[in-house]
Length: 208
Image: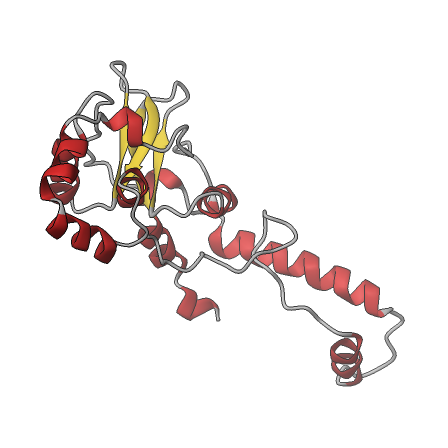
């Protein structure tokens, strides 16, 4: 199962990184440290803070694009490939999931390690290992005769090459996987955006 932590905590507005929840006490304390008289309510202060927070995010992260962060060297899976062969390709790729494309190279789904667990009716890889030790032939038979299309997650959540920070956040919030396909306007595969590459590009240690 995927045990990765989400990119950011849930927010009321999915477009934004959650802001610190300012109490009236926080705001009044801050206003006391500003010389002179401030003719502003706590709600006005919150609105200014909200707008400043949004502007700062756009300034710091507005240049991020899916096309510059994606992995272009991705070999996708055909929908009719048997699951055992697809598993070997996944292992060789080093990725936890790969896009599935049709004959026109359009993305129609994603096949991940979690899809294998679900297909084999196991909650964890340790449970699957124990089952494999007990019933090797049963699992081999199930994977050998099952095509990728029967196990993949479809439709896949995809991004365009020009997708920016907010679009990438939305995409990763919408599914628990570690990668999101990047496609052109016609749905053709361009690359794979990994969650870890997106996180690395944010430089959280410089923002927090």
